[in-house]
Figure: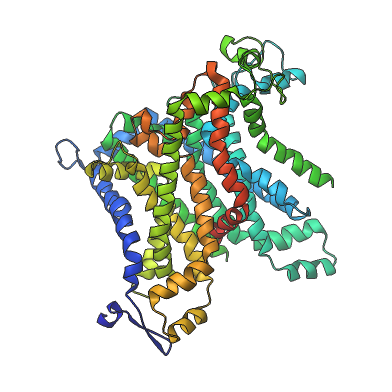
Length: 295
Length: 275
C-alpha cells in the first residue's frame, strides 16, 4: 500500500509516477467532509438525543414527528405532488422531445422551453399573482370564453386549486430541462436500428413503441431521479407566491422544514431530515434496482 | 409544419411572463394602477397590454439612481453567485481530475459518495449546514451561503464527465515527454475539458443567482439579502418599480443563458448520462 501512497501505480504493464491524487482531491474532500459528511452524522446522532440535556432520547423524536399534524399533511402533500408531477413531466417531456426531434432547426423552440430555468423565481411572483388571482388573467380568459360566469371568480391561490397552480409552475420551470434530457437519450438510439425497421415496413407509431421506447429505458431512470430532486426546488415559487403558510393543499415538506427552522425545533428537524434522507436514498436505490433488472 | 407551429405557440406560453415583466416595467404608474386595480380592490378583472400607451423609463431611473438599497442588494447577489462559482471551480476541477484520471483505493466509494451528496435536496442538509455554520460563527454572513455551496459536489460530477472523455493515451504521451502531473492537469486537462467546466458554470450561475432557501434560512439582515429575497418585498403599489427590478434581475441570467445555451444543454445531458 505504501507505494500507492507515494504515487506509484501499476496499470497494465506501464509504471508511472505522480503526485498522490490526494493533492488534487484534498481541498474538495475537506470541504465535503466539513460541510456535508460530518454534520450529517451529527444530525443522525441528534435525532436520537435531547438537544437541551444531551441525553439519549431513543425514538421519541421520531414518534413526535410522525404524530405531528403538520408533518403528516406536508408529507402527504409532497407524496401527492410527486405522484402527479413526475409522470406528467416525464411524459410531457418525452412527447415534446419526440415532436422536436422531427422538426428542423429546433434550437429556437428548445431555447423557449428552456428559458424558464433562467427566470429567477422572485421575478415571476407578481406575474403569477396577476394570472391566478380571483380577478386575474386566467379568470378573465375563462369568462371571455364563456366557461365561467362573471360572479364565480374562483381564487386559485386560496383554495385547493393552489396545488394545481404549483403543478403547473413545476412543469413550466422544468419541462425544458426534461426535454433536453430526452433529446440526448433519443439521439443515442442507434439510427441504423430505426432505419432497418423502416426498411422492413414498420409504421412510425410501431417504430416508436417497439424500437425507440425500449432503447430509452436508461434515460428514463436518470430523468426520473433528476426530476424528482428538482421537484424540491418548487418551494421557491411556492414560497414567493404564497408565503410560509400557503393554502393547505400546497403545504409541502419544504414549508415545514422552513417553519421548524424558524421556530428552532431542532430535535424534530433532525429526525425529519434523517427520515427524508433515508426515503430519498431508498427511492433512488429502488429505481436503480428496477432499472438494472430491466437490462 | 403544423407540428412546428404548435410547438412554437406552446413555447410562447413559456416565455410569456418575460413579456409581461418588460411591458410592465415600461408602463406609467397611472396605467399600471388602472390595469392592476383589481388585485387591490378585489373587484373586476386585471387587464394588460404588451404595448404601454405612454412608455417611460422612469421606474428604471428611480431604481438605479435613487435607490441605493437596490444597488446594495444587486451587489450582494453578484458577490454570492461570483464567489460561489469561483470556489466551486477551484475545488471541483482538481477533484474531478483526481477521480477521472487516477486509480486509487476507495475511488469508487468516493465517486458514489459525491453523486449521493449531489442528489440531496437542501431540506435534508439544512440542519447539518446550520450546525457547522453556527459553530464557525458564520450565520448571518454571506459566507454561510457561499461556503456550503462552493463545496457542492454537482460540478465535480459534471467536470468529471469531461475529463473522463479525454483519451488516456494523450496523458500517457505527455508523461513520457516528461510533463509533471500538475502541468498535465493545467495544460492538457483543463483546456480540453473546458466544455464540462463551462457547463458547470452556466448551470451553477442560474442556480446561485436565484437562491431562496439558503438566504431565507441563514440571513436575517435585509441589507445582506440577494435580489431573489428583496424583490418580493416590494409592495403592489410600486408595481412598476417591481417590474423594473425584476427585469434587471433577469438580465444577467438571460445573458448567461443566451451565451451559454449550448453548454447548458450539454451540461443537462451530461447529468443524465449514466456511467
